[in-house]
Every structure is written in C-alpha cells, then in structure tokens.
Image (tube, rainbow, N blue to C red; front, side):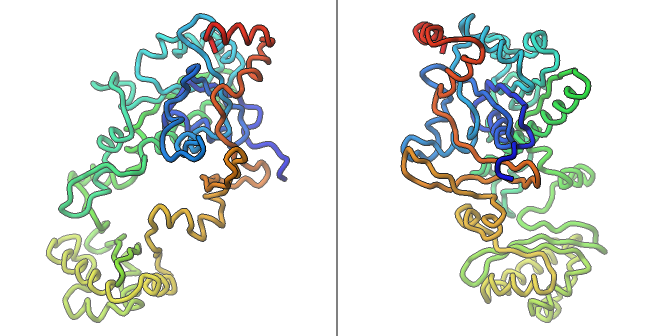
Length: 403
C-alpha cells in the first residue's frame, strides 16, 4: 500500500503563488501525488520563508503551506525567464497565481497568454475581493476576507466588539475552494480537452464558510444571536452553546428541541431551570429576558463541576458534546492524533522530529504522503534538465540571474 502513487499522480502544476491562500491548493495537490513546481524569485524566494516560528532555518509558515512542492527560481522580468515558464506551462495541467490585478499581465503569465500556449490548461486565479466590483483592483489579506465576509461576528460574544481572529480562516477557506475548483476544471479538461480560468477570492471563501447561518440572516433580515447559537422557531428551538466549568475550562454541546429536556435531566439541571421558569428553550427565541435567564442559569450550573463530568453525562445521554480545545490542546487531542490529522516529520538537517499537519483525507487505495518544503531553487537542475538545459546552460542562466 505504501508504495502506491497518490490519487493525483501524473498531474503537473505550476504555481506563481505566495502567502497562504495562493499556496495551500498546490501543497494539497503535492500531498496527493501531483508534481507541483513553485516559481520563486532568484536569490530571495517567497517572502514567507522567514514567517512564523523558525527552527534551524525551517519556517513553520512556509513548511505548512509548501511541503512536497518543487522550487524553481525564475526571473520573470527577463525574456528568458518568461520563455522557460511558458515551456513549463505547455506541459502542465494546472497553473496558479494570486498576485494583485495587473501583475500577471506584466510578467507574461496572464490567462490569455497561457491559454494560447496550452488550451487545455486549468488557470487558477485568487484575489482579495473578487474579480468584479468596486474594489477588485485592491490587494487583499486574510484580515480583509474575515472583515468583509462576516466571520468576525462569529468571533464576538454578546456586547463585544467584532474582531478578526488569529487563525487565517479566510486564507484557508479560499484555498480549499480553489482546490475544489481546480479539480472540477481539471476533470472537465481531461474529458473535453478544454481548459478554463477558475477564479475565487478571500471574501468568497468566508462568505461560503458562513453557510446556512448567512442564508437565515438574509431571510430574517437581522443579525444572528452572538455568543450562543439559539435558532429555529418558538416551537422547534435548537441550541449550540459553550460554558465554563468549575475551573474555567470551556465545553460545548449542541441539540435540537426534542433533546433539550432529556439533556437537562441528564445533567441534573432541569429541576432548577423549572423552578426559575427557564425550562422552555423556545422562549429564548421570542424573549430576550428569557434567553438571558436560561443562559445565566446554565452558566451558573455548569460552573459547579468539571467539564469532563458534564461531557461524560451528555455523551451518555447521546447528546453531542465535547471539551473546547485550545490550539495546543487540539494538536494533542486523541481523535486528532488517531486519525493522523496531526503527524510527525523528521528533519535530519536540524536533527529534530516536529509535529506538522497530517492529511485531512484517508484514501483506501492511493494514500496521501506528507513531504517537506523545498530549499530555494532546490529543483532548478532537475526541472530545467528535463527541458534540455545542460550544466553549462544552467551556469549561464545563473550568471545572468535568470535563475
């Protein structure tokens, strides 16, 4: 099983991409067996090589987003550099870029230019705001995607100011959309011989991430309740809520109207709720006062014992419940580790084994494999050698700073 190629074996991608949203789609392709050639600036490389935590020269940011790809340095401001890129594109299935509008055209890798070279090419373009609209020409970052897409409301508790979160949810959401889109376009190209341009954006990623809650908000014409998700109707309410235990450690549970009384009885809370007139969850839909009473009572009761006990009682009653992990706790969670969502990778150059992202998928026949990020220009000789450049030609390219 371990010797079998990944599900994308034989697929070739070229990426003039940087940062996170622009690199993760191709890192995922590499995990799944595709050959991915990352184009970097000679001598400098992707600026994210020095971002995040650095261990022995290895960047947590760059490693996470570029593992398994091959690094080719090319000066795309030179005619010879662009000519090499065009040779690579002629043999590629996928091309990706995430530069601000105008850069691709200036450097010879816009869609129309590459389409003329390879009509079956899948061309992936990632922007901040989207390709249309009043701000299409502006650069964008993860914070912009979070701010405009609505996720900041999800981070805010009742009465708190909205804020962007520390995790790059706009970048990652956009990257996953780009990955799915390029696979769909690749299937189309393989079956019809016709390539196409696939566009998505940081804002698009977050808007999609908001899911049915955004639909409900649009239909109701008002913003959702923050902090605790109480939804549904007066007759059929549901709740997803988090509370702190006696030691201040948080837990979460989620249930529908049929499970409310059973869950509260399992916790031993129902009698107190009934005594205070807070036993009817549906009242939280129509009364702010009742909502506050229900939530404050639950907060008081959960603070009387440990979250391990509360989670155990809820799960025994077949109610969805879990402790709320910090990022560090998540990296050590039993289910995360057992499923390989976090893995370990040995780096002989620094003599350390480090925890890294595993793979979010499990393929029964074509397993994914975790690679490492390349050194700058590590694959110059390999890639250019396939294009017919011998050692003398490579030396000449280096001397002229083409690579």
